[in-house]
Length: 246
Image (cartoon, rainbow, N blue to C red; front, side, top):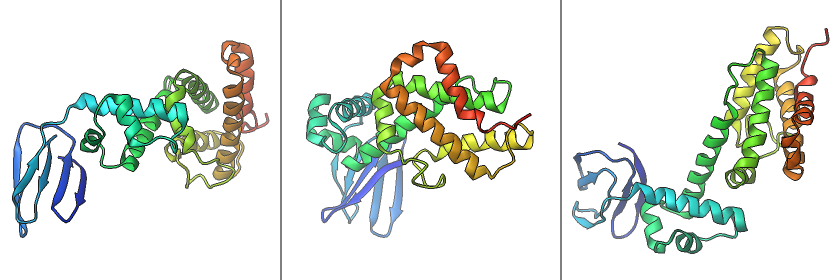
């Protein structure tokens, strides 16, 4: 059982529960009995009485609200979009959003994590079948470039929270999971004498700085993605400086 949100007010405790199971669970606390139905939203007062009970939440509305928010964030920016506009775009009442997302910040966090998970998943397609660590890194770069182009709305969400590696350390970035994946390939490359024996952190920053550069360039010149030779030559530059000179 996973609680999506618990918030407190002078009237009671608001509990929003996400996942759907076919049972009801009672729990006895000193302040009263909390009745929790999964995928329902309950409002429970401090003496244990149920003040209000909403109907089961519609899983499709999570998707509807999320997509409406993504569309608006892409069109007018995250900071310029409020919950009223998202509700209107989704075709629901503003109050309905709060049954699914406890706040604007909760919705934004959900959308960022959702977009980032898509980014990571797409970046790993066919990576493990590559013949070397260099080729694995290059495949990830290509995957990311094509995903950014094919899913510009979700990519813009990831970019909005991305902290450039030349400004912050690789342990303090929004794409930390992606850094960790690349560190594995870089470490293996060093151990297998494929990459230069330099500090791992240095190689990681060097690689990601190159990826940032090519991503920015192709965002402005997407036609590069249609030129296989040029794309290969550009992606090759992201790993060329990592390799040992033979």
